[in-house]
Every structure is written in C-alpha cells, then in structure tokens.
Image (cartoon, rainbow, N blue to C red; front, side):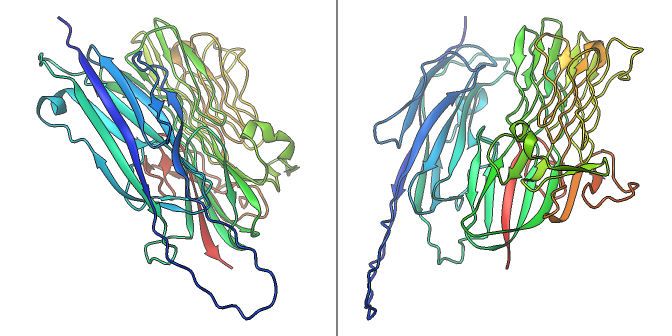
Length: 476
C-alpha cells in the first residue's frame, strides 16, 4: 500500500504595511518646487517550478499579488515539490522585513516531512533583511517526503503557511544600513544605481559545480572562487551585477537527462543509465555594461604582456566550479574548483593525446580550459558543454573550464578576474588552487589558495552552493 499525503499549502502571505509621518515646511523662497510622489508596491511575481518536482498544478498568485498557493500530492519517499517566486519592490521606498511566521511541524509530520522556505541561494530569511526600491528577492519553497523512512504512518491532509511582513524602511533608524548592498543568485541581472560618489568595495563569489549524491556518498562539484577589490564610482551611474547559480545536482539518478549548468556560463552535461554527469557552476561578475559574461567578449580590453586583459568595462569576476562525474562504480571524480587567475583541473586521467578520455582543465586569463577527447574547449565567459552522455561540464568564468570525458573525468573550473586597472586593493582566493606568488608581476592577477569553504558568503573563502555579490560603500 502506498502512503499518500495531500498537502494544501498557502505560502508567502505578505502583510505589507507602512507608516508615514506628516511633513510640514515653511518656505520663504520664491520659486517652484517639484515633489516626487513616493509609492509603496511590494508584491509577488514570476513563479518558476523546479524541473524535477513531482507533477502538480502550477502555483497561483492572487489578484492582489500578496498570496501564492499550491496543492501537491506526495506518494512515495523521495518525492518533493519545489518552486520559486519573486518578492518585488516596485515602489520608490526601501522595504524591511519586519517579521515572519511559519508552520511548525510536529509529531509524525516532523518525522515524515521537510518543509523549507529560504532565499533562492539557500540563505535564511531573516528579520531586518532589506529589499531596496527597484530590487527583488527570489524565494525558494520546498516540501519533501523524506527519503529515509522505514515505517508506515498514516497522515491526514495538511495545510502549511509561511507569512512575511514588510514595512517601510526607517532611513533614520540606527539599524538601517545604507552602506551595504547584497545580491543573491536569481538567474537574471541586477542593476545597481550608485547612490553617492565615492569608493566602493566589490566582493563576488562564483557558484559551485553540480555534485552527485549516490549510495549516501557525495561527490562534489568544484567550489566557486572569491574576488575582491575597490573602485571609485559616480553618483547615478549604473553597474550591472550577474550572480552565478550552481550546476544542477544529481541525487541517486541514473537516467538519460540533461543537467543544466548554472546561470552565467556554467556548462551543461547529460547523464545516461550507467553514467552520471553534472553541470558547471556559473560565474559572478560586476561590469559597467549589461549582459551575461559570455556576451561581453568585445569589452575584455587589451592583452597585457600576454598575461591578462586590461578591461575598463568588466570590473571583477569570480569563477564557477566544474561538474562532478560518476561511472558504474568504477570511477568517482570531483569537479575542479574555480580560480584565481587559473581554474583548477577536474579530477581524472591526464588530458593529453595518449588518452581518449581525461579530465577537463581549468580556464586561464587568456584561454578556455582544454577539454578531453575532441570536445569543445571552455570559452570566454562560459564553460564547456556536451550534448551527449559521458562528459562532465566546465565551470563559468572569465574563461570557462573544459569538459572531462569518459570513465575517469570531471569538469575544470573557470577563472576569476581582477585585471581592470581602476580596481585597487584587489585579490582572488580559490580552493586548493594555483597561487600567483611566483609570477613576475602579480598585481592584476593576485591569487591565493585557501582551504576555507562556506555556503555563507565569507570574505577570502571559496563558495559552496550558489554565487553571491556584495557592494559596500567605503567613503569619499
């Protein structure tokens, strides 16, 4: 007899409230004064269902755009339903998350179900989070019938909820932080309009390549890199932020299926019934021109000393990791982590003419990572992809990583970038990677290796999961 849960879930009921103080002024100045009307508009938009979720009707948003609901039936261990929805601040006033409420699972429901609501990058939703005017946050909702169950428990239908309350930000409050802007991965570009002329610190973390979980063992995609530097920006100018997402992971899956690479250049792979391959992680970059990294090749600038490109439009890049590989219990390979000035190679046999298989190599400052066999190499802004089974994809980066091929292979990591000459106080960190200490002039490629890794965006750490970006106002 199959156990069946029918979960009727009401998620993200937004209570949007704001208080205004009366404004008065006695003006003794002759002339005309124009006042711009402030508007308050925080709402839900743009539902996307995760492609491997259990079949169910697409969630719906109500007419007032403050509630999204869905209904799903989970029938066997391992079934799950996951979707994403954007919380959009389309008004002219910043909003602050004031409070949250969530169903607390108890008893058999706690034993049998997982119910999580986080930001898309898996970052915890926290009171005090700021949603600036013109920006949006992507929320991830996931409900799962736990896989490791041994006993039968009959459960009744269940209603779940998650509620958030946004209020107008008090810009005079001591808790209001007007100097830091954070950017999660959401699969599209963010525009940052500079609020004040001055010096800004830019930090970017690339995304991890796809990992494999099989027989309770994890085989890891390469970690994303970290790049940091400071630059002078002018009030009302725009910079464009593209945050990479991780390559698609595999959970106990032997099937013919496409494993997409992460947003912003992660390569795509394909698995079969005896071979698991995963996608590469996407790069994270900040630039003065709009577009994903692969579309900015014409802005890479001048090649200096055959070592790096001196771009004035691409400011900073953190590379993504290569995808992992698994083949019929005979070989298990971790993906190469991102650079630094050179991405790390994937695990596997040497990549040379004596083998018809081998690992993907990491991207550099001037070329994409070499792929095994006769597969296409990594390119500017994008890791190697392969449309047939047996190849693990490369990570995105200034130059993407190569594909690993056949039984002993994983994808290479993409490279980072700090070569913009207007960028100062700059350095890149990457996991167990090649350091630039022995280079004749490392100013614009400065790289240090680290064994520190975190899912939480942490300075000088490599990154698991999705990428991230942070802009901090330093001063005049």
